[in-house]
Image (tube, rainbow, N blue to C red; front, side, top):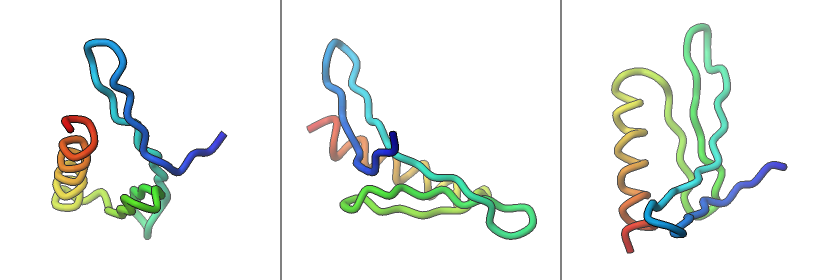
Amino acid sequence: MQKNKIEVSKEGTGKTLYIPLCVFKAGKDGYTISCSDPEHLFKSGTSPEQLQKFRAWIVDTFEKLVKN
């Protein structure tokens, strides 16, 4: 089953952010990572700089949705 919404589980002691991701080939050597949640659309590549941007997006989204 394909889901396109970010979900948060706050049960138990841990808190988990479930992110629907798609990874697809982009060009000869690259890949694109995207999140299809309509409220949290995101698209990034896999170069070191783009992965750093992806990590920042994950941290920001986690802080907004899980820590609140």
